[in-house]
Image (cartoon, rainbow, N blue to C red):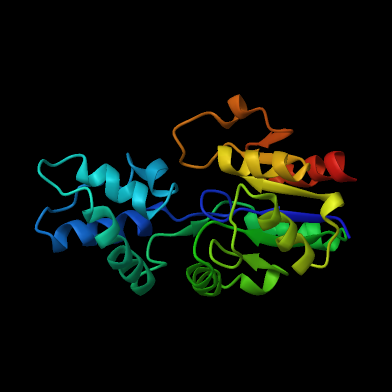
Amino acid sequence: MRTVIFDLDGTLADTSGDLIAAANACFRGLGLGDLLDARHDAGTALRGGRAMLTLGFSRVDGVDPGEVDRQYPVLLDAYARDINSHTFLYPGTMDAVTRLKSAGYAVGIATNKPEGLAETLMQSLGVRGEFASLIGADTLPVRKPDPEHHFEAVRRAGGDPRKSLLVGDTATDRDTSRNAGVPSVLVTFGPGPHDVRALSPEATIDHFDELDAVVAQLIG
């Protein structure tokens, strides 16, 4: 079965608001106040918890570099407690998934978010059951851009890795697809700071309404 695998953060959903809030909870706990801004720092949020903590601590003096590792589990706990106050699916996301499934494609998720948090979020959004697989950062001994992360998401969705592609929003997604020898489709509407067209993916889309035609062109 031909298979479409999606990244989660910045591809299916904008999760940056809740991620920024969790990081700011850490900073407030240290008496530093809110060091990150939900709008201006959204791109860093989708690079992960440690990236957010590193950026925030860079804005104050005298912070021990080891504080990033000490605060990381605190951030994860804060995020788990409030994972879906500001998160939203991008326009047309689930309509596109429904159309792909109706056309005979399998669909799954490969994310570098911890599996438990990804499962909780997708359940909270009410769409977990629409995806045949979900592979998180800690599901396997490897994570993106290792191609096995993508391959396992395809296999668990019931698909053939040779007839798959990856929809994402970052260089990590592009590199994963290249390592796997499959096409990548990068969305242009994620909050990252760079133009994904410069990453030279096989295709880009400006809205999920465009995905069906691109998938058909790339994998049949």
